[in-house]
Amino acid sequence: MTTFAVRTSNLPAINSMTKYPSIPTYHSLDPRNGRLLDEAVPFPSLVIGTEKVDGTNSRIILLPDGTYLLGSREELLYAQGDLIGNPALGIVDALRPIADNLPAVEDDHIVVYYLEVYGGKVTAASKQYTGDKRVGHRLFDVAVIGDHREMSGWDSQRVAAWRDAGGQQFLGETTLRRTAEDTGLDLTPRLFEIDATELPTDIAETKALLDKWMPSTRVALDDDAAGRPEGIVLRSPDRAAIAKARFQDYERTLKGRSR
Image (cartoon, helix red, strand yellow):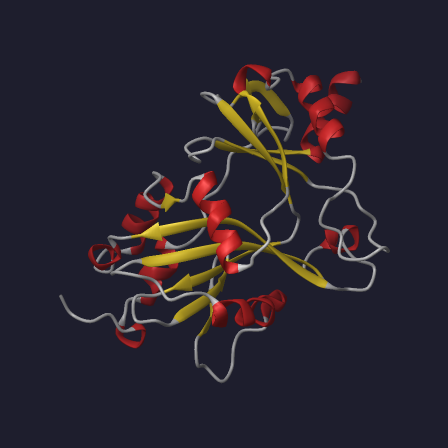
């Protein structure tokens, strides 16, 4: 096996294989009007609810040669040691100190830390988290990619198909919590653990669940934050099932139904 070296690697393939996959809405969205349909994502047993933070999806990509890359959801922004990085959304400034202190990967794997960078001037919702333009970050997933060498020879469409089919291996809840503790990173807030039979499938009842568990954000960065949360991410302990429930989707749907 040849030694991995980031400077000679297929960066477009690494970018594609480490992108965070889209998470479905808990209730399906009607493409005609953006309202929710009655069909809900099934969960097999235990359901963990976590706060969905409205920031920008960001990546720390730890490579087998001991270096790292930083990226937004779509693009690579910085390689360790570069003099200049893409300043988009303040991701590099927020994540570089974290990446410098993460442990090097073991074996011939790529490990990806997915963090939500929020506050500052990151999104239109930043005022919900800070009145002083402070910037925060929360870890929400970690993936381990062991077959990156094979995929380095694939075209971008094939890599994307692998990713969209669930090819990335994400840490389960127990290991994710231990990883966060070992690295000193804060996870997105854990709100509840309930049996799947207790999870409502009715749209109005799901809105009530959001209201109960998320009256305000739990990740405000200062006392001047407006505090309105985006929603909740629902996930199984092994992360085989995952979905998002956003306030705006339920509010839009219920308002439309009341007319």
